[in-house]
Image: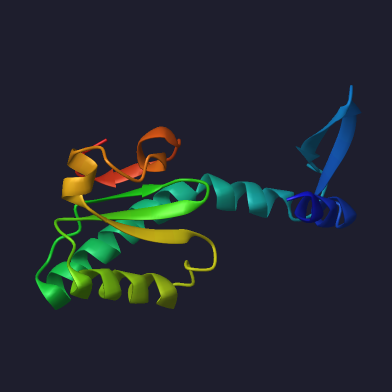
Length: 137
C-alpha cells in the first residue's frame, strides 16, 4: 500500500501532508486527470449494478441458474448463488475473468445456505460495500 501511495504521489495524482506522526493523503484537484478519475469513481456503483445484471442474465440463459445477489467490498467481489453448483461457480469465474475483474478483486462464489446461516465468510457481513440483487444482507 505504501508503495502504491508513493507512486501516486510521484505522479502528482495525490499529495500528502504530515499530521502529527501520520500522513494524510488528498487528491490533487489541479491534476489534468482529476475530473476523469472523479467521474470514474462516482460511476462505479452503476457499473457494479450493470455487472450484476449481466452476470445474472448470462447465468440464467446459459445454465438456467440464478445468481441471487452480489456484494462488493474493498478486497472481494462476492457472488451469492442458490447452492454450491460447480458449473455455476466456474461459469461466473470465467465471466469475471473475461471482464478483467479477477485482477482487481478476489472473487468468491458463496452458496446461499452459508449466507443464511451467517457462517462464513465473516467479511461478507461486516465489511462495507454495495449489495445487488435480492436483499439478503
